Image 1 (cartoon, rainbow, N blue to C red):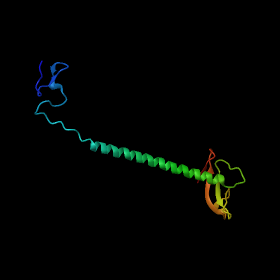
Image 2 (tube, helix red, strand yellow):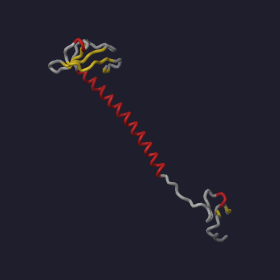
Image 3 (cartoon, rainbow, N blue to C red):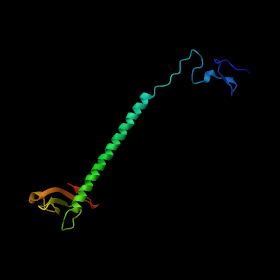
Image 4 (cartoon, helix red, strand yellow):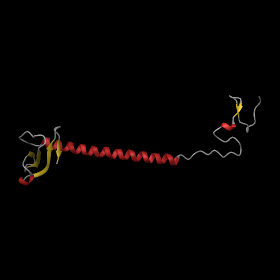
Length: 131
């Protein structure tokens, strides 16, 4: 067979005319094929994903700050002076004396004249929690 005109849709592999089964128009009066504008969809997707990343980052950042604060409390209490073995679940009070030394006590702040730094409780994992 010879070459077909451009307007004729002939499939060389199947040796058939297959214009009717094409997913696009094949004649001159068919609607024009226009590429979709995916920029809006893409920008919307980028915005949503960025918001999710920022939200997750903020959560992790908050957890990090809480962890660092807990670390600092533990560092402060464990470096303080005390002459007793703290009991898990009990409340203790951290003070600073006139020599600027931190010490741990069972005496509540309303009964003590030293600078009160905070009250803490020892949990079962031997971590000090601010109360």
